[in-house]
Structures are given as structure tokens and as C-alpha cells.
Length: 374
Image (cartoon, rainbow, N blue to C red; front, side, top):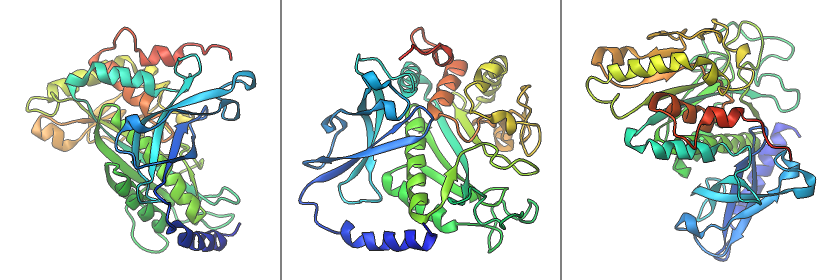
């Protein structure tokens, strides 16, 4: 469908969105499927929701999402958080859920469950995260980079990062719409910018404490997909959407504990980096698929095969900001995670590594364990 038709239909829809809902509330339940994509379906509720306990458990056909076999396909959706819906507005909400099997066990693709246990075990550390989500816009028809010359390439990288002006940035309307949608939904989105490769953008979420980080990023991704859908643009989180001399896409992870944020915290930052150096392979296994295409030691990345760190060094695995070194406390940035990470896995193993694991929630072992046959 041509882009103009999509925009025209969205405009036509607006008059129906203003109709009286007769006191009913629409709750869009969202969840993460077996491929790390977001699925959703809507439920009509009889009244405004003021507490998570008022949201009923629901279910879906897991055989259609790769989360269950056809002969035992029911997967249950347990609400864990809800947000104002920027598309339907009013009292309508978006409901983030966890996926559970009918035997009372978490679905094997439910990584939030283990992450939540790790966060709860280390609440005293007050671990803050900030995630920098890079993504690339594509033409929905042929999959080419959005706005690029058909069959060709734009000028080399240079003027596009934080660029301003025609030919330097593409689809700013999509990005601005997403920004407002996140703010309306109550997401702690802290900023946006155009990235190094044209038609690549970034938004930052945080600081968020504990499990809120993964929740917020997943909802922000859902909002991005929905906004892009209305503008007729496709979003990809692939870490290397175009081979060659073009930057890849990451999800840089900024981390601090309460001790790191106090004067003298540099010692704790250095201790955390030492722990991370010993768990490099374990972390890389959870830091996104096809990340080897991005972490080549070029284009502001470190090599995937080795661990490194440095002050203000964007070519290192871990970067310590110059201001943090000067002040002696603050946070560090893990630059290894790819744009397509599951934030529950990344924040979970980060807490496990720098704060210590707990007996019943080992993120790395849980992920590596062979899944039971359906």
C-alpha cells in the first residue's frame, strides 16, 4: 500500500477514535514472542483501571507465536505493568505481560521472570540503568534503507550524526511522534538523536531502577513499531542492517549502583569492570544475535573476541565517561550489547555479575539450559 494511502487512512480513522466508548476501557495486552518480537491483542474492560490487580489474566495461541505446541497451545498472559495508551488515549491502556505455561511455570521465552528475581535480590544496591536504543528505518516494500537512493548510496558518513536539514536526516516526523507517544505513556525517555548512518536513529530510556528498565524499553519498542506502522515505515533492530563501511546499531548499557554514584565510587566501578572482564563470553552470549557482524573493532566498536575498557574510548568494550573519571564517581557504559538485545537478559546478567548471583536465579545458566521439549 503506498505511503500516502496509509496516511490518508490514519486521518480518516481519527473521527472514529473520538466516538464515545460508553464507559468501556480498551486494554492492549502486549507480550514478547519466541523471536523477540512484540505481539498484542486488545481486551474490553468494564471500568477504568487504577491498580494492576484489577487486570485479568488472559491467554493466546502459543502455537502461532512459536511459544507452545499445537496440541497444548494455551499460553497465559499475566499483567505486570500498565501504561496510558497514546493511540487510543482517554482511560485506555497498554498492558505489559509475562508469558506463563498452563502448568504454572514461566514460558521458556519469559526472561523477565528470572530477571525480576535477580533485581529483587539486589534492591539494596539500587542499580540504575540507562539504555541507548539504536534502530534503522527501512522501506516496507523492498526492505532498502529508508530515504536512500534506489539502487545506490548516499554520501559517506559524516554529516548525519545529530544532523539537521534535508539530505542529512530522514523521517524526523516518525521520531518526533514516537518521542511524544513515550512521554504520554509515562516512559522515562531521556532523549533522541540521529545516528551516524543515515536513517538510523537512537532514543535513550532511563535512568530506570531494576526491572523497570526492561519493562520500559519493551514498551518503548512497542510504541516505536506502532508509530512507524502508521507512517508506513519499517523498523529493524538488526545490529548490522547494511554490510560495508556503515555503522552498526547497538544498545549501549549505562550502569551504576548506589555506591558508584557516591564520592569514591570509582573504586566500585573499577571492581565491576574487573568482574565483567572475567565473564566476557557469558555476556556476549546474551548480548544479541548477529552481534559479531557489528563488533569488529571498527565503526566505534571493540572486537567481539576480546574485552577492553578505557576512559572516553568508544572503541572499548566498557567506556568510562571523562566526567566520571574527573569527579571520581558516577557510572560506566557497556558498549557491547547489540540493538536487538532482550533487555531482561542484559540487565539481569549485569546485576548477576557485578552484584553476585543468587541460588535460584542464575540468568546465564537459565538461558543456556536446554529447553524442555514441547
